[in-house]
Image (cartoon, rainbow, N blue to C red; front, top):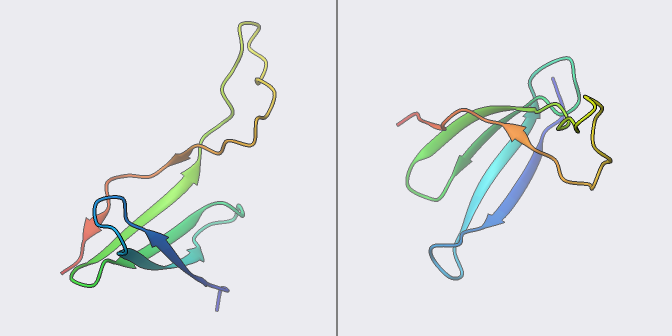
Length: 79
């Protein structure tokens, strides 16, 4: 079974509240992940992949600034 990590993410819409989620690998690349989460009422599932680095004017990737952009379709409410 693939290793998973449980994460706690603070909510921005309700002070002191959080989303609890499990992150597991979902593909051959390290940052392809499946995220299953809940805010305590509904479960949500989303699969994410990293986007390619943005290209500069010469078609060369811009220098990394430690920002990671992920492509994540809208989360599915699985209730």
